[in-house]
Length: 189
Image 1 (cartoon, rainbow, N blue to C red):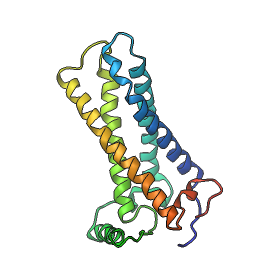
Image 2 (image 1 turned 45 degrees about the horizontal axis):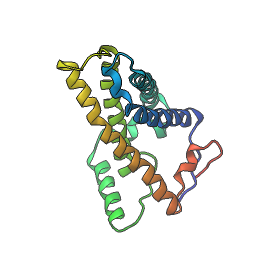
Image 3 (image 1 turned 180 degrees about the vertical axis):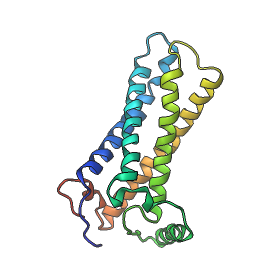
Image 4 (image 1 turned 90 degrees about the vertical axis):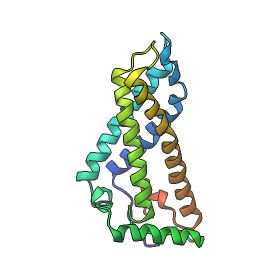
C-alpha cells in the first residue's frame, strides 16, 4: 500500500463529530419512545442529539463541496460506468477473499460512503421534521405519524452502515492496510 498523509484537522473533526453524535443518536433513540408521555426526557435528549447530528452533517456537506479534494463529492459523482466498474472490481476482489485498496472514496468504499451519507441525511431530514412538529405528550398521528415511521425505518440502514464501515476498517487493518490511522493527527497510513 502506498503511504498517504493523514486527513486534515477539519476532516478528522467532522468525522469524529459524526461518529460520536451518530452513535449517541442511535443509543438515545432507544429511549425516545417516551415522547407520548408528559415527562419525556428520552425524547428530549434524542432530539437535541439528532439536531447536533444534522448540524454536523450540514458541515460535512459543505466540506464535500468546498473542502480538500479527497473529501469532495466530485470524487463520487456523477455516477459513471467507469466508477461502477470499480465497485464491481472491488466486489470481485472480496469474493476472492482479497481486500481492495483504492484511493479515498473510489470503488466500493465510495458506494458505502454514499449510502451512509444518504442514510444520515434521511435521518436528519425526518428527525428535523419531528423535532419541530411532533407534539410530545401526544400520540403521533396523521402525516407526522408517517414521518415518525419513516424516521424509525431508517435506523436499520444507519446501523447496517456503521457495521459495514467499522467492519471494513477492521478488515483493512487485519490485511495490513490500517486505514484508520489517517483519522489520527499523527497517522500517515
